Length: 266
Image (cartoon, rainbow, N blue to C red; front, side, top):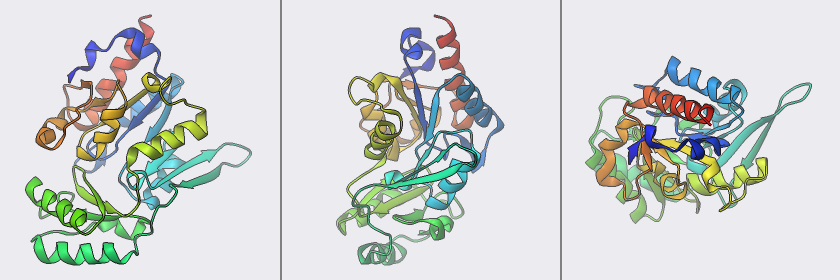
């Protein structure tokens, strides 16, 4: 990773899409910061397409698609995408990843039982009621805050039972479908905006902070991270190209400002 200030102006000029994680990328300690929310508006006014790509649930995505200055939102680590089509009245559209499995699957129920028995302090996330496809196990959103070692134990239990699992900064997200953040991001960009894989790779900047963002870091050559990514370097094999000097939402605002400044420099 190199500082975001080292991105070439020519690369910044070619960017059309800004994708970003939410927790600890736009937020800090669970709160959406004024600086990061203003950065979304600044990027939107510059004509860029904005798409949060998050582990958060379908219920949150409905609100975000309707009320944030974004062009869509991908949730539950790639299980779904929501967006508004503008008209006389905005119309909310939904897309579910092919083969996505509802979170009533018995394997997920078995995983949760094992996790609760084997990892002291682990618990289902409070937003589980708003989820359609995944199981979110809270290890750091609320007290008691567990270690990354505990999060890794949860992930290994899930994978041993045949599920997919990713560690975020607050949850371990667990699901049965053959997808993660990346396939749905590619699907959404292609179907909604006509983005072309390969030729359009450098049109995308993704900003993230944690291991569940790794597929996006590995895929997009202009991927960025906020500074708190350094807490997870032992768990990430594919780092993003660029990093902010600041953490969380302040880091996102730093990346947005650098992009906009470099785009204006040409």
